Image (tube, rainbow, N blue to C red):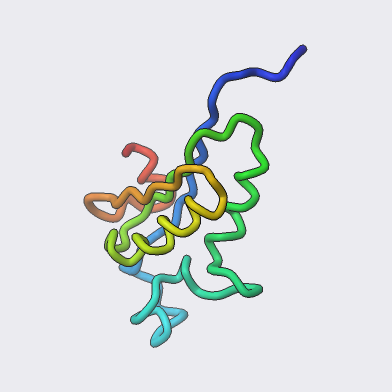
Length: 102
């Protein structure tokens, strides 16, 4: 069986600021997915793992943070990894995996 040429899309759920109180006051200024971990924003690690997926066409980050909070990171990671990364904001918090309806 050969490798499919079908394009793959990855979805990473990044949550939102509505309940996360454990990281306050830090999380008041920076979204949790952008907290530094091992020298990179936390969300960078699953994005990098997705880059190894054959035929990866696009990565979607889905959450309830303001789009402006992710704009600069999404632009830089798209350029760095040479794969389109796009942030999709939920209209309201839908809970775990609820944003997949987008």
